Length: 178
Image (cartoon, rainbow, N blue to C red; front, side, top):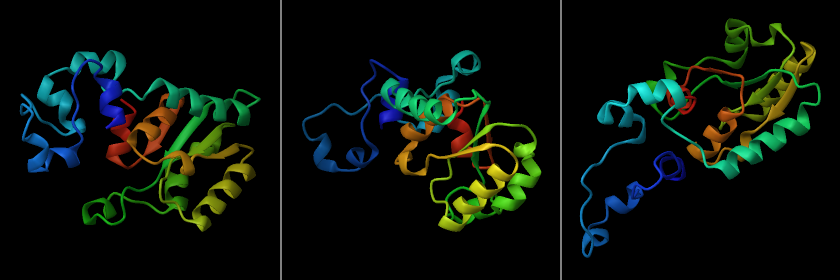
């Protein structure tokens, strides 16, 4: 909701849970248009705008919050790379688009250059975080765990807005990158 609202200022946005309640519509006009956020570019035919600015914009205050945390942890001004190595593990479809952390780090070659690595994996285990931190620091890179800040897509998009590069096999996270 926050992400869609910030991306389309001036447009009345309804929460999906409200749209499903009959009582919500009793005294309201039904919307002219309905779409999932990630389907908006195709539905609105706005591909040119996407190339120049992206179609999903995180709220400015969330972008600033993420930038402050990155700046505090990046005094050397290293390139900032975000990483996710799987999507929602409850989804059968997403399991086929998932890697172990070790496989993903080896395939992405993210640790081949000095950088700040930001963990954007929302449901990383303690063992995965420890492994990522250890491998990052062993490669001479800096580690920052953003997991606690990732309560919804707007928060994730805010972190992504501050990256130099995103490494992800999760298409929903890739959409947030524009």
